[in-house]
Image (cartoon, rainbow, N blue to C red; front, side, top):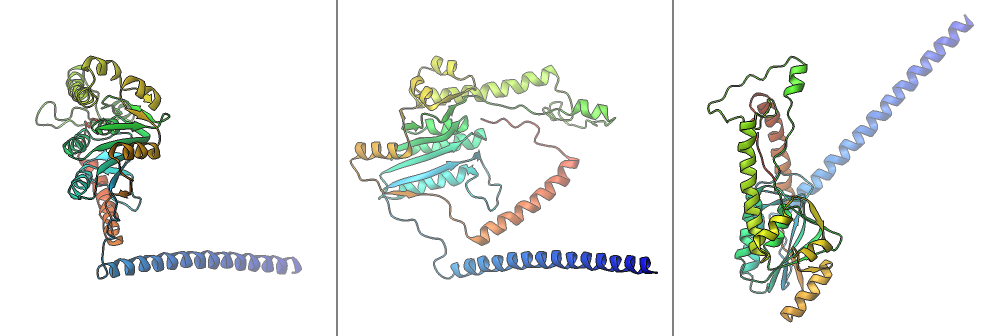
Length: 326
């Protein structure tokens, strides 16, 4: 009886400990959820108040516009709370236009930290920079490669940190193929297309030599456009750029020797040089999109819905088979 009584007490203590643990976990979880919603409410109230008290924070005065280009270059925003992870072409074009219209702005500086991205988005930004009537300067900090370099080369003057990554004048369209994996698991890719090349680049089938030749032709044309742009913007013979356009990267110090950048130094060095040339005392003002909390929240919600829809949709249709990147 004594042993049975001890066992009962141990079981009761165990149940008591488990219940206490569950209660503790629930309490912590409830506290975290409450804190989250309280923080959400604070942000909501501030955003709501901003609708009545000035809304978007006005740009500070200055005479040198700095436009940060940080992240992948794309034509559309993915959305989210983390800013400055992508360079959306139409937004950058608008910022350049705003700086051009501001009579106080004497020069536009592009602070670049981008590995490249969409050829179309890159082209749109590069064209906008070339159309600018005010002095333009690109400063490559850590990375100005591929499309990031294409954009930088469009400015009238290019600076780079001597240890930065530049160049990478090339185009990529590589992708994984799962046809062998599907075969191993007895899964069949049922090919249904109207137009014999409609599914070129599909990861679910092996690319035949005829299709590979077509895709390579597209990449070569994009590469030629990239080479032409660098040759014209950097005032270099095209044959020289062709030799450099292997797709490999160069350090900033190497890029300077090869004529891909004009000067080496930091952002501060570049601004000092700009002050001397324009005979001004530079007052920097950052041009970037300002979003309210409500806008960010809407983007996050829309992105989550898009991801769910995309996940379901791509189970039935995979349309973006071939997507080259510069």
